[in-house]
Length: 270
Image 1 (cartoon, rainbow, N blue to C red):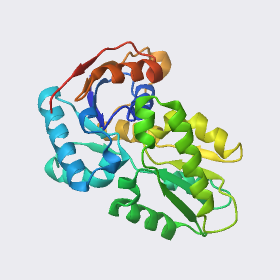
Image 2 (tube, rainbow, N blue to C red):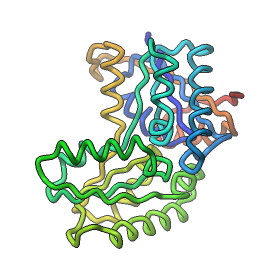
Image 3 (cartoon, rainbow, N blue to C red):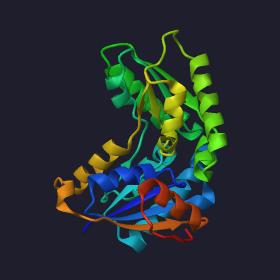
Image 4 (tube, rainbow, N blue to C red):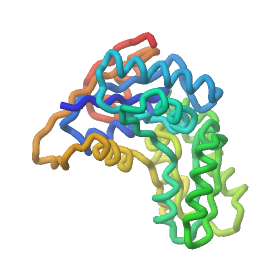
C-alpha cells in the first residue's frame, strides 16, 4: 500500500484529499494541517518556504510517505521549487490555480481568478498566467483578485463572514474587469475556496462555471506513483491519519463535515 502525504496551512487541503480518496482509494493518507501557522496566504514567501521545508522533512522521515501533495496554492507558489531541489528523488505534486482548464472551458475568454495574496503576487503565478496566455489561440482576459481573510473565514467555519467576503471580492472582480463583457468562468485559486463553492455559485449566477484543482491533482498523483486505475467496485478502503500543529479538533470536525469520516486528529509539533 502506498502512503501519500498531504499538507496545507489548515483544512482547505481537505478539498484535494477528497479528490485523492476518490481517485486512489487503495492508498494510506497522512494529512497535516499547519494550523499553528495559518493562514499562509498572508505570510512572507520566506516564512511559507521554511514551514513547507520543515513539514516535508518531517513527513518523509516519520511517516515514510511515498509521495507528497502540497495541497496549498500559496505553498506551491512559494515553496515547491525549493522542496523539489531538496528532495530530487521523491515525487512532489503541487497545486496551482486552474487557469488552463478554465481557458479551455470559457466560451468568452473572460475568466475571474480568486486566490490568496501570496498566490496572486507570486512569480510562479505570473509565469503560469503568461504561459497560458501565450499558448492560447485567442485573447484571454484573466481578472485576478487577492482575497485577504477568506481562507481564514472558511477555516473557522464563519459562514456570515465567508459570505460577506465572497460578495466583496466578486464585486471587486466585476469593478476591475478589463472589458465590459461578463466573465463566464471563475477559478477557485485556493484549496479552501471549494468549501465556499455554493456561496460563490449563488453570487456569481448560473452562467458562471467554477473551476477547482482537486481532480487534476489526484490524477497527477496517481500517474507519478505509477498506480493502475482503480474502480469503485474494487472495494478499496483508504486509511487516513489526521495531524495538526494547532488545535486538532477543528481539523477532525472539518474532515467529518467535508469527507464524511469520523477519524480523530492528533496534535503534532513541527
